[in-house]
Amino acid sequence: MKPVQSELKRWMEQNENFQENYNRVRQEVLGDPEIKEFLAAHPELTRNEVDKSLIKLHEYKTQSKQCDRCKSFGSCVNMLQGYSPILHVEDNEIHLSYEKCHSRRDYERQQSQQKLIKSLYMPKEIMQATIADIDSDPERSDAIRQLVHFVGQVQEKGLPKKGIYFYGPFGVGKTYFLGALANKLKEINISSTLIYMPEFVREIKASFKDDSINDKIDYFKKADVLMLDDIGAELHSAWFRDEILGSILQYRMMEGLPVFFTSNYSMDQLEGHLATTRGGVEEVKAGRIMERIKQVSKEVLISGDNRRDY
Image 1: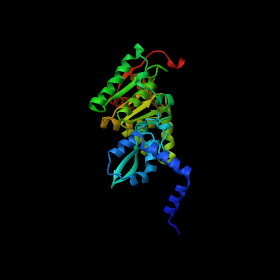
Image 2 (image 1 turned 45 degrees about the vertical axis):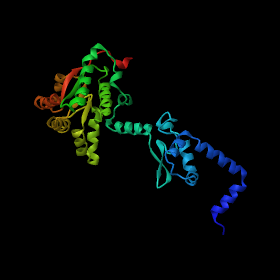
Image 3 (image 1 turned 90 degrees about the vertical axis):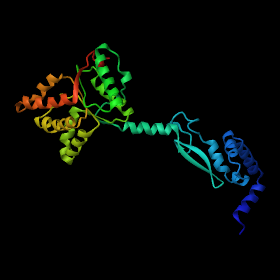
Image 4 (image 1 turned 30 degrees about the vertical axis):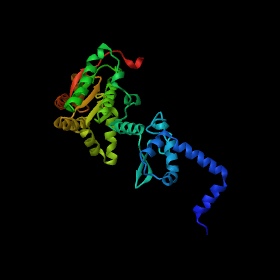
């Protein structure tokens, strides 16, 4: 049996169309400015090695380099999405490898950052909120200043021990403030956990069925930044107030971890709300919870028009 290489060579010599196409492709590849520069930088490469590596060189020529022909990671034209080709020489042989392109690195960074925000039952628009999109209504200026000040403290000194207790009428954008802050914090690699309180109560009650309650409470205790949305709106019980909320706040108070709240109640009003249970009025226990809330946050009013009417 004749060697395959000699048979292939004979076939190529006999097939004029193939030979013509091969020569054309070879000229195009070797005429590419980047490939010419690469070969000029490696004079040790023989013609035989260059011809042997023509497929690699052609692959390199046809691929986008560091997104020069791609508008985004999703529209990448390369064979390996998000990877850019690199030519290099080892032992006088041409090798082709790939590295992550700019778009893929940005995409992975965004994906990684997005994981820094954990949300329980928060609306999609809240998860996309930004501080820049908060309108500059004079009635909200103090709340905006407090939000920006918190971010500045994080960047300069690390996480402060106190968050903010945002309170005000229905629909003034309190929850939006939390989402905007969470997105800003993820840019500096600080994770946030946002919880809609009425659903949180139901989540905790449902945890008894799969025995996961302790794991969940522990997670909320240790989150970098905990955000409790609409506290006071939930149908609370003395048990939830003291054993769940009290336990979480006690831990965060002792560890100096900030908590953010939104509520339709001021702190004084919330204390009265928490004191009222089916068993009667429990002012001492409610006062104990409020003392913890004051230790992990400071009260800031958000007022203005109801934006849900727009």
